[in-house]
Image 1 (tube, rainbow, N blue to C red):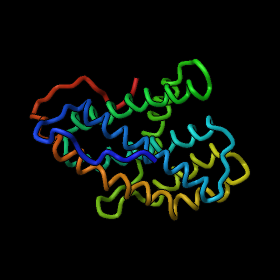
Image 2: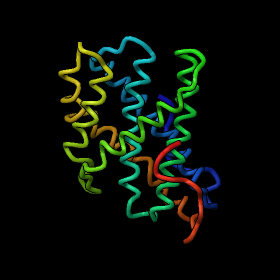
Image 3: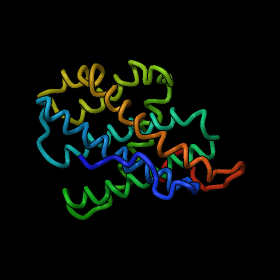
Image 4: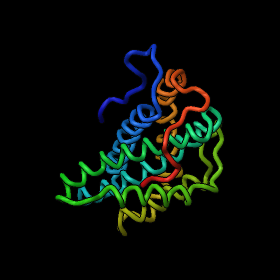
Amino acid sequence: MARLKGGWNQRGRGRSLQEIGSAISFNIWQIAGQAVLDLENEGFQTDTQSQRLDVLTEFAAFLLQLVDRILFDQFDQEQRNGIISGAGLHMAGILQDNRQETNGEGEYRKQFLTTLNERIGDYSQCKFSRIDGPSFIFYRILGDHVSAKMGEKDNKWITGYIIDIAGDKLHKSLKRILPGLIDPAKKGLEPGHNMDFGKNYD
C-alpha cells in the first residue's frame, strides 16, 4: 500500500477546495485499495483486476460519504460540497486511468460518478456519530454492495465481515489522516468563498 498523505507541505498557507478534495481523494483511493487487499488476505476471492476495481469503487464511495459526515460541522454547506465534489471528480480521473490499463480504452468516469451519486441516496438516511462513527445500517449497506460485486462464492460471508471488521477499519484509517489535511486547509477558506461545485458529480 502506498503511504497515506497525512498533511501538507508548505503548511503555512491555506488550501483551495480543489486541493483539499484532491488530497482527500488520494487517501481514500489508498485506503480503499488496502481494504480490497485485506479481503483477499482473509480468503475472499476476486478473479480479475476489473472486479477488484468494482469492489474498490464501493469502498471509495463509502469513504467519501464518511468524509461528508465528518466535515458536516467544520465547513458550511457550499464549502463541504466543493470538497466532496472535488474529491469525487479527482477519483474519477484515477479510476479512468486504472480502468484503461485493465479494460482497455473507454470512458469510465461516467459510471464511476453515477455510482457515487447513487450511493449518496443509499447512505443518506444512515446515522453517523462523531464519537461512534457509522451506524450498523451504514456498514450493512456497504457490505451488501461489496458482496454484490464479489460474486456468489463468498457473498454470504462478506457482509458480516465488513460489519464486524472491515467497516470499522476503514473508518479509523480515514479519521487518522483527515485532521492533518483539514485543519491547515481551513486557513484558506473565508466566509463567502465561491467555488462552483455541487453535491452531485457530473
